[in-house]
Amino acid sequence: MITQVELRNLFDYVDGRLVAKTNSKSRKIGDVVGSLNSNGYLVASVKSKIYRIHRLVFLWHYGFMPEQIDHINGIRSDNRIKNLRKATSAQNNQNRKPIGSSGIKGVVWHKKSSKWVASVCINRKSVHIGSFANKEDAAQAATKARKELHGEFARGEA
Image (cartoon, rainbow, N blue to C red; front, side, top):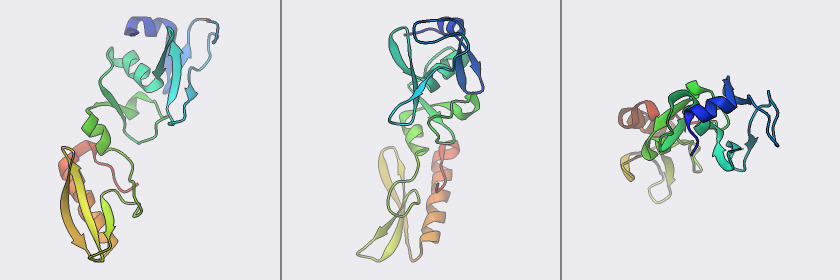
């Protein structure tokens, strides 16, 4: 594992990017480090190991790599330090983008009841918030519950 001292000797941090301070076989002084992987993260090889750039940026600033690092705005390639925060796995999942056909996190259509169902996940368990005649009411209830239960890690509909 690379240390903060080694990292700072190799790279400067400039607005979310790591910039090479030394020449190597694959990069020159002043080159921006990293390439986009298939999951949308910027990655780079450092000392023969592949790292996600956001983990290196966090290490560069704070001197350690936590178990998880959350991109606050959900954009995996936005590695500005103000967009990165230490998180648990659960907190990182709380800040995920919505999935499902409704396009609203925690809201699904329940065919049998012909209602929109709002739920929120806490401690890996789905907690039923309520059933609603319209999607907007379900979305409002889910958003309110997420804010109460997930705090700063709560993500809105988008």
